Image (cartoon, rainbow, N blue to C red; front, side):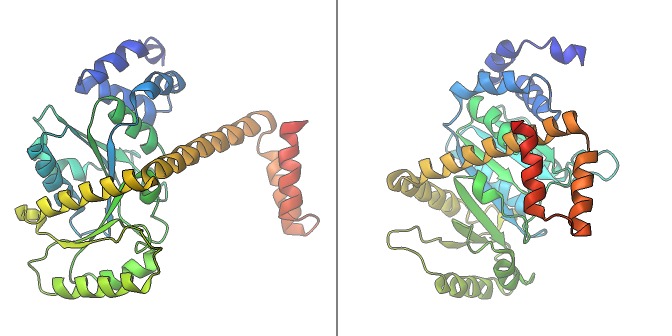
Length: 321
């Protein structure tokens, strides 16, 4: 702890902005560890962030998210883009750390100084993301990344947070996995800005594309809204990724021209502020009152002597007294 308090945050931020990978890694570690220096770090990064294009990549386990991310990085590097990758891995049940499966699949870019790849543990957080992802995103943004790819653990009915964090959300599907039905159940038909049927050399790829198109047509979209394209790729062979990058660029242009980019980023900042405030209030209340008062209120709700709203009012009153 003493070593962390001795960290020179302004110097660390300047070295990260100069592209020093070790400085970037140290800043993200401070974020993940909930360092006491976190407020100072975020304050130092704030003036330098807000420029990177953020692309979320999600889909069911097994559709090829890591392979597609790797291929997408290759295509973006051909355009001389500086790329950051936040790969949110499942947590180890023993250490709580990331299992690092994604980094194993992305070794193609390990020696590229203009690609930064970081695996982060979800640590049981629902939404397919780590709780610290927004702050880690700010680190990569301030460090000069042109594009940041966020790969989620895997989409499910509770795992659609990526839409709130990314400028563009790419949903991956694959033939032979029941994706059509699962997509509707998981709610990802509402979050995707473009859909990619990966492993398109397999039987059933065209059927997945037709099913997806039919389901998307059932939804009502306002006049002038973005119409998500449905593309096919073979990420393992790098096929179709140029078209994906082109559609991402088109979507970014639409976001900027329609005002939706600013709206999405404002919602993102609002959600982050709210999450930080709620966490701080919960911690403050716990430090002052402990768990006993909350347990007593919960017991009262169970016993029927009070209701949840009255109990919540009583809890909130503790902050105004």
